[in-house]
Length: 519
Image (cartoon, rainbow, N blue to C red):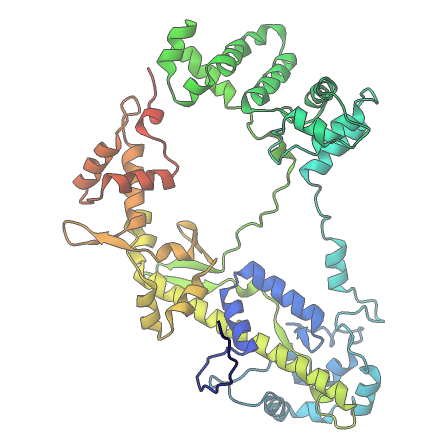
């Protein structure tokens, strides 16, 4: 076999995205909560970006301005951030020149370049605590930030460290707790835990059994350290019985019998079979099952604080009765009013300042301006997409989910004159607050089918119709999937049985046998 090395030249075209273009696409895709975090990060790292005060109190009687430069600047303090034109081709610092020409007072400012160089030789955070005693909002926010919540293992280990137990069991219990999963179950066999123990301190399985029993009795919530769902439920039943007065304990006996011997039949809704086996009525079984539902199969999750942020709508849609239309507007009141810090803007053009300082400031000015432009472009694009959706899905807002229509993203992209990927990013993870509740924006972009009458119906509308049919069925004789197909066909919706089964699963609706209510 022979290998040869050679050199070749090849011409080709490659498309590369500039970093600022990537930043614009990322910001377009961000929901409101992430955008707030992104702005906070930029405010922390970029001294040339600041929050504009809507109502500066420098002129308040008896008070001196917090920033002398801001006090001397006159109208400049109320001027918004620098903006670029739609072509985006102007040089960044040409925009700074334009800004100063539009604000002549800034040229007469007594704040000289030399003073600026002395005071700002090192870029310092804008939101420092000033001599006037002004509080730093960022310091306050950090002080008020909640500490990271303890995880389930840490909380259980802490409980065990404070438990009143034989000291010989304490290290064994800690060893077992290391194998507890986030649901609170011990799914690792005790033999395996014994084998994994450090050499010279290997416990016996009997010793681990004693430690496990102590864990099950002492840790909260009850049910933690169970080895399977049946044991988890029985531990909770024991605790409930102990808390009941003597006359109330009898009602838990039937629940215990169901868990110990008939849990699978209960899960499959075979109540008549269970009633026949234990000699109880179906009504007694129902009451016992209602008690069973008060127990938890995932006890340790009660220890976890929910870290999921609440849904913050990116826009609101409201009905205007005067003009019989729906109006959309952005939830931009949560975003700070940003602008370029003009002290740094002047310092960047001061040729008496050291060149490295000017270069550093110019880089930050450019980054700040691109962020402002990207946010403005995001808001404009998202609002245009939402307005197109509101116009196309008027029936949804009037009549509800069953009236939603098929709406491909390509149609909205063509209507707005943008690429379909832009619409996709504008829609991603965004939510609307509507008269019908909070709705994900992506919900309005769905495929569909055509009914027998020739009307276009979205898949979500079909799901809504399926839910209505099941809600209206006779619970003592629920409909099978084949019967659901027939009922939807009566409404002009002809879909296959497997599609009905798929949508039923997506809606979290069990089969007809499990939906049946036994008399």
